[in-house]
Amino acid sequence: MSKLLEVEKLSISFSQYFKGLEQRELKVLSDLTMDVDDHEILAVLGSSGSGKSLLAHAILGILPTNAKVSGSIRYKGKEMDDELKQELRGDKISFIPQSVNNLNPLMKVKDQAIGYIEDEDERKKMYEKQRKIFNQYDLSEEVDDMYPFQLSGGMARKVLISTALLNDPEIIIADEPTPGLDEKAVEETINNLIELKEQGIGMILITHDIHTAIETSDRIAILYLGYVIEITDTKNFTGDGEKLLHPYTRSLYRALPETDFELTEGHQPSYLHIPKGCPYHENCPHQVRECHYELPELREVNGTIIRCFNPLVDGD
Ligand SMILES: Nc1ncnc2c1ncn2[C@@H]1O[C@H](COP(=O)(O)OP(=O)(O)OP(=O)(O)O)[C@@H](O)[C@H]1O
Ligand code: SF4
Ligand SMILES: [Mg+2]
Image 1 (cartoon, rainbow, N blue to C red):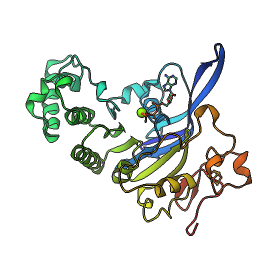
Image 2: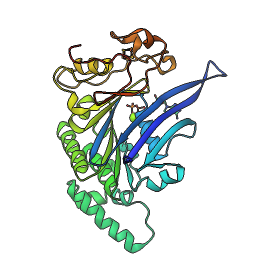
Image 3: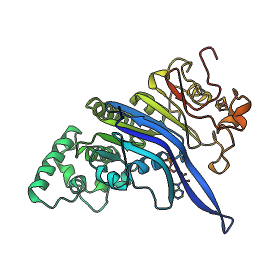
Image 4: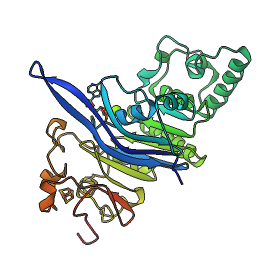
């Protein structure tokens, strides 16, 4: 049976001018395949600039016009063309954007939450629903008439989450919902996301914070240089990482101090110089001959999806 949302071999690139008139291709996502079902949170974990927001924008159909895209995105088995993306956006598929700057500074919070509704009765009903949801997130009535600059960071985040819920979505794409929040607000946000999942929503949680991914998700897809290199059950991030099969994922987990670790830039070569063969081979202690000239395909090993010729097994 089809999953709620399936992404298959999604590639996104941009043409860039280099040294004046020379044009070159910057491939940001390559052959990305993943899926999410209802009652599930899939975390997409990758360093800054690894194409996470572009993945969200591709699903929502809001990519910049200069992006070149190939691959397939399906909602309940149905190919999402531009028309279907537009139909689902803000309705069955909701978006919690990365930045609170996505709030319109010139509009009262309640008005931007419900959006433009012509019919007066419909509008009234929507304001009532908005108030009910805001209440659930401890956003008092005064907040309705506030402008974004009057909100604290935590309140603005709650407004974004509440707004995403107004149309009873089946899928939520949450793009970095926790940065900039204090510890309590992070915990609250994580609990809110888990609650939504328990109510049946399927969620893609985009993050560069491995802690948030581990605390929140059911499965984690790890990006490296625009490739998904492993999709594994979150419960495999345990012990000293012996259940993680990809050398990059395991070294990432093992390098994790108990607090505040984030994927850092500098771990990865530049997108302009993606090496031939396995994208990780220049750093990989487990490389075998073909890693240098052949790109490993995604395949299943012990229930984990992995892009590697020589996966780690227990005891490695
Ligand atoms: N309109 C554009 N034109 C050219 N290149 C772009 C464009 N938008 C994004 N990119 C490139 O795509 C890369 C990935 O962007 P994206 O915003 O998806 O990264 P990200 O993983 O969300 O990063 P962050 O964690 O910092 O939010 C960027 O580093 C940039 O080089
Ligand atoms: S394919 Fe080869 S280089 Fe790449 S992660 Fe696996 S063992 Fe390492
Ligand atoms: Mg981003």
